[in-house]
Image (cartoon, rainbow, N blue to C red):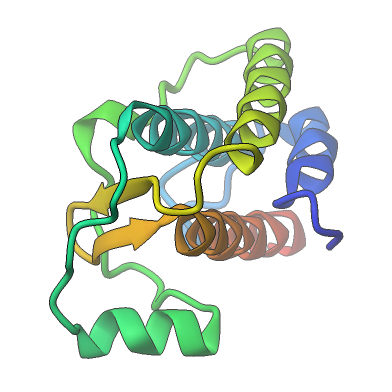
Length: 151
């Protein structure tokens, strides 16, 4: 995967949006792509709306492990309501959301590095750590997509 936060791999996955493998995931491939887009957009909007400096955050062993390993344990977290995917999302809508995700990711690269995002479980991240989180998150879902395709 390139440094594009997995956007190209997510775009490629849209062709298989309807594919499901209940033994791997309750969500279809399209739902995984939809969730990734919703998360990227919402996280970036939070960065844009934040006011530096970055608030202090407590140390979390779980957060440290996720960032050092670059992986989330599968099946442990529940997505917040605002980023839950719809089952009926169309490939055209996914394309539009991927375009929007790409634009907003480009926009946040120009923000003050001390802008911040507060994750509901992992705490507060500055801009660069937030972008790393997005990459880890998307890779997690791309692994699941790969497993759905292979099932």
